[in-house]
Image 1 (tube, rainbow, N blue to C red):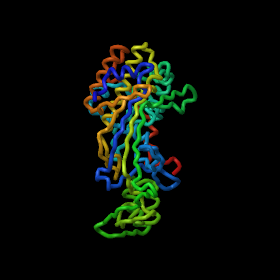
Image 2: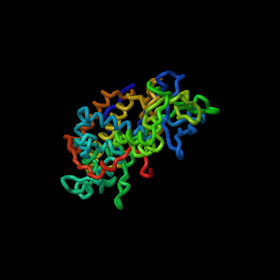
Image 3: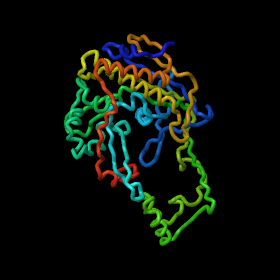
Image 4: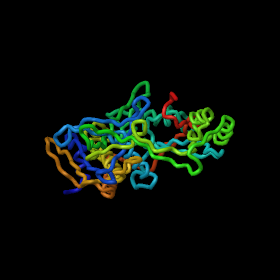
Length: 402
């Protein structure tokens, strides 16, 4: 089998070219097929649950569990790009980007800067952290180059591409704007599902581990004692924990005392047994072809090829990390399969992209876009000062309604 090349990306960037490139990887628990895995948890009212779905696999309907969602897989690509920027990647580190900086108290009275890139923010270039910030005293939302980027359309995406290429590659929606809401579909789609080992009655495992306190199994404080302790660690506690501890005086509220192991539905979700785990990634060339950049036919195609190479590089990087969360460490159980859709039912199997090959492809695509579309990446950063009110109102609570 051959490797994907720049010629393939150029063909896919042209109208009528290949529609998609897909990857399929068979996975299993790192402990072996007898191990269990912890899928992503979702809130169902006040309790957590897994997402169970029927899928058509190998010609049959199968009961499956969602291990990693499309959004989570997107985040893993973004995380790889963010790390590549910090590590000085030859292309990603030079990619234009938006950076928001907050001046925050580190808890000791020392002010430390906290920086977030557009690739780290959930709505990328349109994120509220950017919109409510300012640049040299001018509100970001009133900055001419930012307004021009937000006014981009699919007929000319160049302003937003020049300001924040990652926004164009990964997709975003300027949903809070009162007009001209730009919606960019993500050209990447991916997920990980597990086929339940028990197709009749696939039950999750409910259990919680023990905690041993070397001093005592239980500690109880009276109201005055609890208040004295709370005064010493007040800044270290959430408001909810602080109120609960001063009310009940239970040491367990702040982490003192032992916790016995538990099992059954009153315990926490711990995982589930699966017979197969399947990771799928899809890169849609059709989505990229829906966008133009005001660079003429050849220039537009070169930018589309560059965007495709960015996503392929991030896919290759994220593929190497299979520790998804606690109790969900995976490994590849078979050689991954990469398929290039060549239209009219024709497909070609290709070699799986290695990080080195993906890096080389990205460098080639950038040089081509530089020549044909005057794309010039030299580490341009739009530095946004974060709104000073935000750090003072930040909370670890999951909901604004707590």
